[in-house]
Length: 220
Image (cartoon, rainbow, N blue to C red; front, side, top):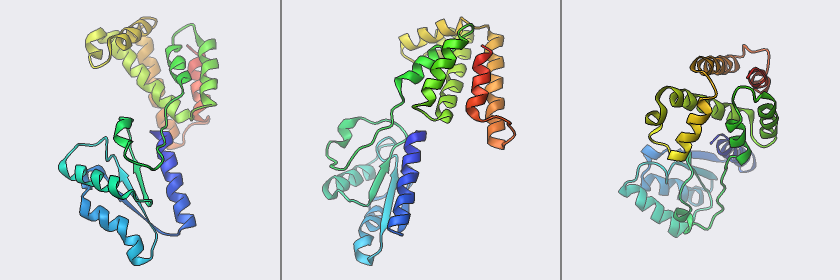
C-alpha cells in the first residue's frame, strides 16, 4: 500500500508539472456516474487538462452505481484516469481494461525476515533485515514487524482461537514462533515498537527508523 501510494503521488506530481492541469479525486463513498463523466469529458470541452483519480472502485462496497461506472469505463477507456486500490484485487476484473496495470507486491524476503524474528536468532534476523531494506522501504518493514508482534502476542495468549480468521497453517506457524518468547518479552518488544513509532513521528529520535530497528533486533 505504501509503495503504490507513493507511485500515485508521483503520477499526480508529474501530471501537474507537465500538463499544469487540475487533479480531481473520487473516493469510494462519493462515486456517481454523472459526476465522473463530467470530470472525464470536461478536458475536451473546456480545453483544459484534468487527471481523474478514483480510489477503491473495485475493492470498496459494491452497488449498482459502481457497476454502471465500471461498464462506462470499459466502453470508453479514458486516458486521463488512474484507478488506485488499497488492496490487491482479482485480476479477472481488469481483463476488459486495455490500460496498464501496476501491482506492488512485497518481496518474499520480508516474510523470511519476519519468521526469523525470535530470541537467540539476532545475527540471522539482522542479515535478513538489511537484505529487506534493499528491496523495501524501512517504513513498510517496520509496519509488518509491528503487525507480526501483535499476532504473536495474540497467538501466545489465546492460541488458535485468537487467530480464527487466519488459515490453519498461518495460525500454527505463529503459535510456534510465539512459543519461542515469553509473554513478557513480547509485550516489552511491542512497547519498544510503539515508542519507536512515536519518536519517529514526533522527530524525537536521535536515530533513523532502520537504526532503531537494528538496535531492537540486536537485543533479541
